Image (cartoon, rainbow, N blue to C red; front, side):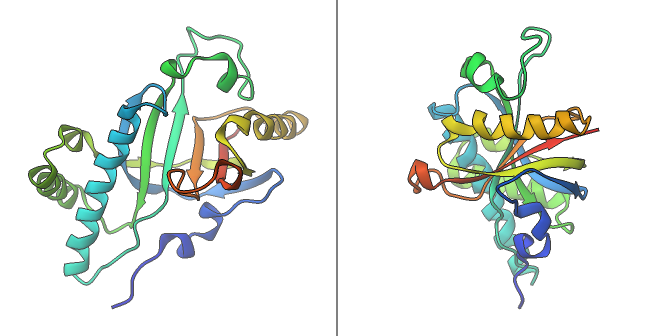
Length: 207
């Protein structure tokens, strides 16, 4: 039985260069969980654990149906209340807005054949096994980013504003504006990788 690896099937989606590039991102579906607050706090970790518990339950369900797949990289959309924090550029936001004010949607990309019905069953199974109430908040989420600017960020998350500044300049020079939430794809396991070796795709939908 061949195992589906979405990172190989959708190489453009899961790879980026160390300079800004324009890409066209296809519609996709994800396991998703919404949260708010500092990503260094325990709540963020618990959300990740709930999401992965559901993802791996789904994986083994589909493996039994001979549709096995690799559980994809963790991703997240990030945003803040723009009515409360006006006039802050995307490169300045990480430094000027307190982490407690950030909202996020954690994501793990799913194959096209994953259904809401099977997600519901997986959540029930995972909850019965783990007893984590957050599992009940996991959902199947559809997203179409379309035209986007992306760039590979190398190093600590704290240095992301430097990469975002390069992307913002690239967008401004070409007359693009933001058209969606800031998107990060974590190519490295940040619980096991030294900060200076982290690889993260930064993506901004544009118009």
